[in-house]
Length: 353
Image (cartoon, rainbow, N blue to C red; front, top):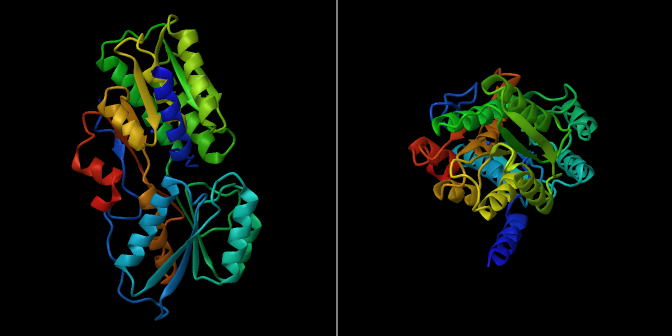
């Protein structure tokens, strides 16, 4: 029966979890640096006296994460329909940076007033975005920084801060459960290495563990390259190899690895009841896992806010207003204790914002 359950849930994960580029409810940082923290309507007219056309380009249109980004952008446009029109673009998946470059080039040919882009690669779109700027198109980069200065503003999660927060959630939960952390281990299931955001997030978690619990040994990071089956295998192998050698918890650094790790966690009825699992980014399965007692903490980004504030920033630039060069869109720690708080529910369900 277990095998049937795992198979069904694994298929669900493959269809649902796509990479995005995780009891301490007070540890939050959700407000973008250049905003008041709540969506607000911009000026009712534009500096140019026309409706601005803003193109939003995401990493993969089939991903729920990037659809949430688009929904934030569309919401800003709906609230400000007299001054801005938003159109969204992107390849179906994140697997091909070259395909996204083709999308960018096609968008540039339509001469939008601004582009809000989540680049699949930090390097691949540099030339195209430089050309856009030469044409007078404002370039707002979100989520993943590019390896050049060819942009007007950058809005993203502070991934190092997010990784540090994940470590704090994990360690605080262990201590709240009365676990003696001396000589203990935590497994680290990771996605794809090498990108700016992944390096910052992973480094933040490792730095956080050194700061909050240097006595805990980290098993990993072990990289799955965002393949669900491989992430599941990694999590299962860590549990099997280390369960009797001091393993007290697991950390997964995105919603795909988190979903796979949740399956591995549920498989093991022999784990101590105080075993702790913390993930980065949420999903319906992970939130249900938290309600059911299998997930003790999640670090939540604000993809909706990246879309909403990304378009807002574009309009400000087009109106000649000054904006911050770099804007932190925030991370929030979610625990069973604060899960049903109004602000947390609004973060998880943008229709409540």
